[in-house]
Every structure is written in structure tokens, then in C-alpha cells.
Image (cartoon, rainbow, N blue to C red; front, side, top):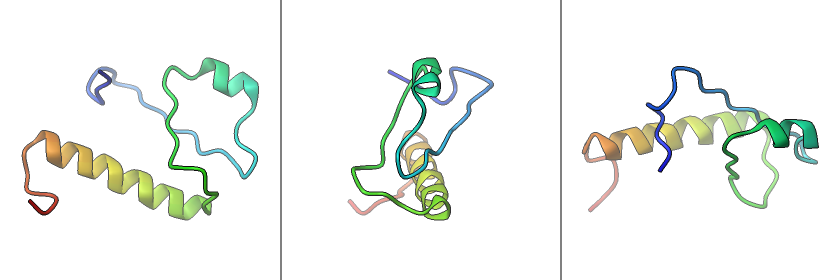
Length: 67
């Protein structure tokens, strides 16, 4: 399982409407997708931050989402 705490360096690269170059994809250790839709970069930043916050909240057993 991947953990955000496994490394002191973590980089997120947000691709454009046509994705990322094969060079970047080959260098990536882990790849995630937000879905098949294309989102504006600012929206992707907000979605990514919210998902990271959600994951950390759940790991820390904070009542993030409704039971």
C-alpha cells in the first residue's frame, strides 16, 4: 500500500487535456486519475487537495464523512 508518509518528497503533476508525455509517465512511480473527464487546472488542484485532506482525516480517524 502507498502512504504519503513513505517519502519526504512528493510531487503531483497535473496533465493537460491530452494527458502527459510518455517520458513523464515512464518516470512516474505512481499514477492516479480523477476520472475520464477533463477538468480545469484550478478545479483539479481543489479536488486533489480535498482528496488528500479526506484521506488524512480518515487515517487519523477524524469524522470527515457521514456515517
